[in-house]
Image (cartoon, rainbow, N blue to C red; front, side):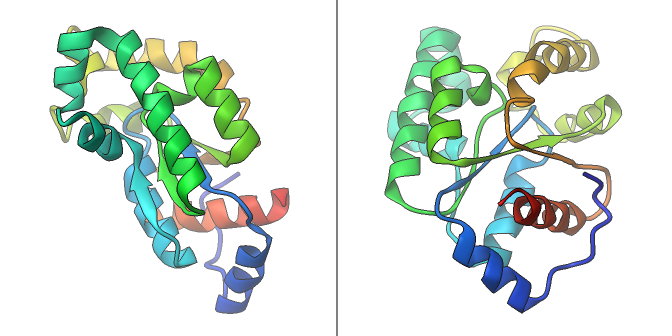
Length: 189
């Protein structure tokens, strides 16, 4: 799916909303734009937006970096799955997940069964540029970010590819990606 889609009309959005009966869950690698695009998508659809990483930090009363350091990735993923399950039960909305959430088999099954999974994808150069804007990615701390992202992209794509909707997030205005997601959801439904 390309990102050069025209914006939907209000009537198109209302018709689409009438057909969406579950949370829209954005999955994909760190830096692909799940949070930024998710906020804009939720605003267009007049739905609540939740960043799962923020909800996890709130529930744990500590940062994700601290959770990784104190408890390790496996414990973090267990807590992540529980928080995502709660978010999906609470309300219809848009949820941005962490980059590794959909790779976890139990979390992926939960999202596929109870949500509308949208894989946001981007090329490696775009990902490297975007993650370079922040220093809050625990998986990028011990090596070259480009090498780590390339490895993660290769390892995780088979899991991400299980999402029924795949949209490319390219450099430029996030609204283009939002428009592409809306078109893709409309086509899929």
